Image (cartoon, rainbow, N blue to C red; front, side, top):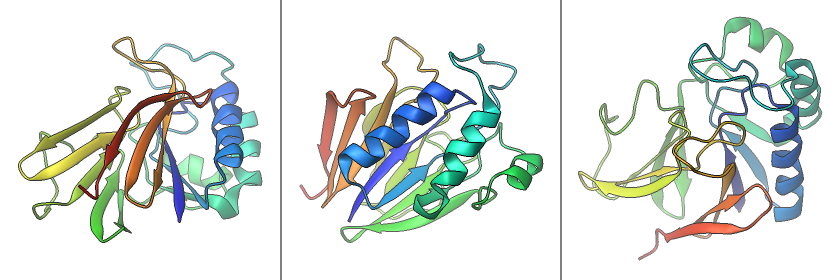
Length: 182
């Protein structure tokens, strides 16, 4: 299995196009979206290529490839136009024998940890800041934002394959990697 994780598209057609292009180029088997798909939110600047209707079309065309959790900028009306489920607050994945709690990050995060065991993974977006860090026996991984990165980070996404997490710029350039098998 190979998964591509992306977060915080915020209605940017360009970001959605790039994420889908990277999904195809990476040969991933699932696209896991960490929320905030269509709306830019009141705290964020308007992203480049802001076109939520185009994002709807792009994502609906890939609906069989997508698993998604709800972000704080996602609403019930978004579920009315998107043809794949977006209203779950979290999902649990088995990633090479490690439990991964996958969420957007506005409810569960490093300051408000979900019930995890030592060695588990917490994967979320929301902060728009890419990171891999250890805390309280868990590993926290954030792929950053595909549309509105913060703190000087580039637009980014993450690939998981056989226990290796690789965070990359939207052009495919590797930023950092974490081997969860070690």
